[in-house]
Image (tube, rainbow, N blue to C red; front, side, top):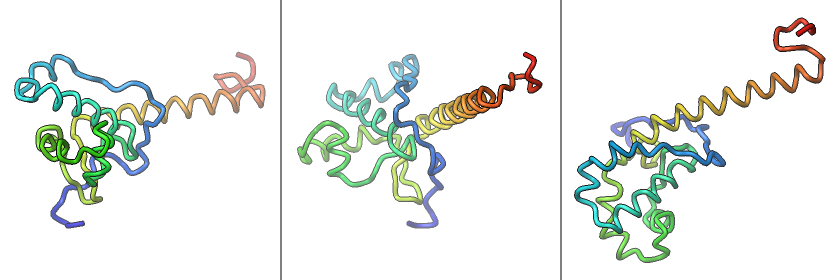
Length: 143
């Protein structure tokens, strides 16, 4: 890809698959220009694509292929409808140097969630290790 494109907005290993929560920011969304201008179909498809992007790896991104995007948007193979609504539903996504589309707000939140997931996994691994060795969280085995 071109050196003129921005770097990806999340690290390549940012994986939130299985993480069943994505912040919606209702006040921000429902007070937005997007909400005022989008048709019902565009709004529904945008929400589906935000969820799909949340669960892609890297999180917060989408592929650029129209066929894949059409399927992720739950439009099946209706490329005619997809191409009609594409500009509105992808309006805040940015093409980055890895050839994927990234949504800045989703990516910002994905990095927070990914770090929380990493810390939770580390904490659980430490607890399992301590349980196997008989150590307690204070490290001296006495509690």
